[in-house]
Image 1: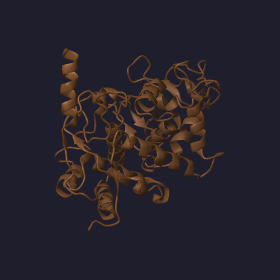
Image 2: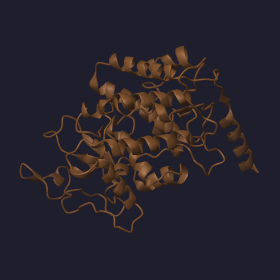
Image 3: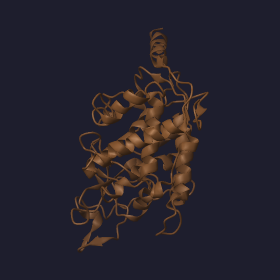
Image 4: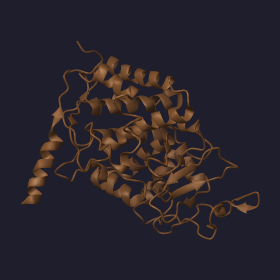
Length: 358
């Protein structure tokens, strides 16, 4: 009885929403938001802060849609609602979205009567992806639909967001709850090619790419880094277990991967801690043995019968062929498809952006 009452209360809270005042969104509005993101970015002079800004916008949109659960009576999804005080969302409120944040000010001053926050967050993320893609070629305008409603409450949504512990989380969130495929999941995680981990927010410190400059390019390098570098387990025995590569001799900033990144290529549940390549040496020292000796614990690959082999095949597809190559098409096409699915999950009657609103 108590449980049914609680579900009813939470359902009523989740469905309280703000309506969109205008019945049309046009191309001019879509690209006006793009230009505002570009303008705000142009005023950020520190490269690390710029990485946080761009990565944070995409992370915000993702954290809004990754709480979707098709099996739940309260499915959530892209609804303009994030549990800001939840551990998993640290670093978003106060730097990306807040009363004094430039992006928030733009929304409330210019767009709140045109599109919902949920729509705006996705449009802002689309702007980042376009601006940082190679030759600005990944423009998601043609696949964007608008008309999402904002929820005023999303109690428990933070508990649905993965925290990077491995592929079991990927299966629970992306495949089971969101109804996506391994191909979709691997494509969406490719967004880690921009942004960085911050110890004060997630407990994970470092860029996914070798440098801050490379973390400002939306491309397939994320996949190349996973398969080509020597990755060794870090933060052993803590909640923040992950992987790191290189040292101060090779990197100005730490370069890391989460267990949920590495599990697309290695079975991190079968063997952990481990090192990805145990035959690489730098200045006479095995690169697996910088902090602790891991040269005797090589990470293992999946067997061909393991369902997660689909993740491996997807990763190889997104690399684009024999390295080196500049073929972004497989990744860009797969990302566009997966992003569309993720951002429209649970929504009906969404509308295409019109050329003009009369």
